[in-house]
Every structure is written in C-alpha cells, then in structure tokens.
Length: 313
Image (cartoon, rainbow, N blue to C red):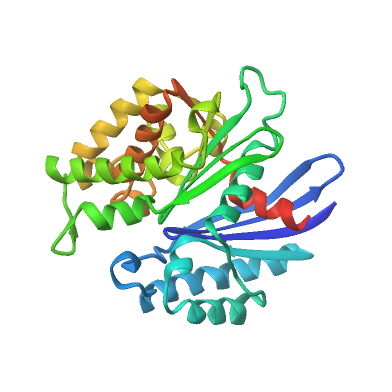
C-alpha cells in the first residue's frame, strides 16, 4: 500500500482525497475525502483573470488540506488544476500560492489529460458490474468545462469543451451582474444552443453513439441524483452508482430552470455553492442524454480525484 494525496482544483470547487492505494489488487482505501467550493473561476470567462478574492478562498482551502495531508502522512502528493487556471492570464500567481502552501506545484493539465484521469477514476471499479455494457461514455461536468471520454479498458477518444456549470451560468443566465432568478425563456434557449454547439464539436472526434453505458461525474450530476433520490441531506453512499432514468433527469432539469433561488436553496442535499449554477449543470447532463439517446445515467462519486490518486500510487 502507498499512502497518496490527490487534490483536484476546478472552476467551482477544490477537493482532497487521501487514500492507501494498492496497484496490485486495484484497491483504493479512502482515509479522507473533502470538498470546498471556492469558485476559483469567478469571472474568468469575462475577464480572463483569476480574481484576488477567488485566489484567497482557494489558498485558504489549501491551508486546510495541507494540515490533513501532514496529519495522515501521505507519501506522495499530486495537485491537478483544470479549466479556470488553464484559461487565466495570471495563473502564475495561482501556481506560486499553491506551492507556498502545499509544497507541490499544481499541474495545469489539458482537457484531454483531465478526461483520461476522470475516465480512470470513474470506471476502474465498474469492471464486471451487472448490466453495465462497454464501451462507457464518461461525462464529467465541471465548473468551467465538460469532459467526454469513450473507452472500455482504455480511452478510445476524449474531448473537453467549455460548457461547465459556472461558465454557462455566467455567460447566459446573468444580467447586470446578478443571476436571473429564474431565467427567461430566451436565456434558456441561448444556453441550450451553446451546449448543442459544443456537443457538435465533441462529435467531430468522440463517437458518442458507440457508447452503451453513460457514466456521469461531478457535483452537477451527483446533486441531480440527490434530488431524484429525495435525500434529506447529501449522502455519497446512496448517490454512488445510483441510476437515473432520462425522464427523471428531464423533470428535475425543467424544475431547476424555472425555480427560484430560495426554492433551490431549500433542497436539503444542495450545497450552498451550487444553488446558482445547478440549473445550467443539469441542462448539460440532459442535453447529453438527448444527444446520445441514453435512457439512464450511472452516477459515480469516483472521478478525476480517484484517477489522480491512482496516477501517483
């Protein structure tokens, strides 16, 4: 067993996994898994820069994670940063801050690398699972981008496009600096069109229709699952490997697009940091299901974070 620490810093959240990994048996024993919503990508789509307050929120979370990593004695640490820091002009400031706090330099990876890590994390334990036919289509709906990966034992094709829940919300559902609550039909129509155009680009290189099992990752998908399961509070064990039929995803997405901030915030399993962006994230998931004809999505709590852990085991 090798004790490893993995940090995934995305556009909306930063997450930590400390685990004991056995590459021989394929076992990953989780010791600590936690998340903070820091909204690192706040305004990046508009300004091209990481905001000072977003950087400070991120560094505060890094200080918390550094204490956990030290306490649990992780032998190897890997910090991966994705869409927001990939796009930002001042990402060097972000890199220096993380290095000062954690002692490791964040790797600002490409969308394709992000896709491969997500695929590994999501599918490593699906082998032999009843009723889940290959190839898989893994869809990781992040804050700034969404990754699409088709594969079986290995990745066949992958593509990353900039249709994450935060980016789509800021681009289409904000007026005068405030999230429209609820959005107008015209805003929703433009949002749908942007997502559809991104799916057109994905299909240029990724054979979406060849996949036989759709696997959905990240907070937008797991939150939709929590709503579908009517959970009074977020429950990872109940959500992991839940299966959501298309009709239920459609129903929840339509409700989210027409709900108020107060109605969404009242959902027991809803993280406060997702209240304003969940509708856009759910619409990305629904659009993928409509494009591929998937009748259900298998929800995974294991994703890029687990893939990062395996990469350093």
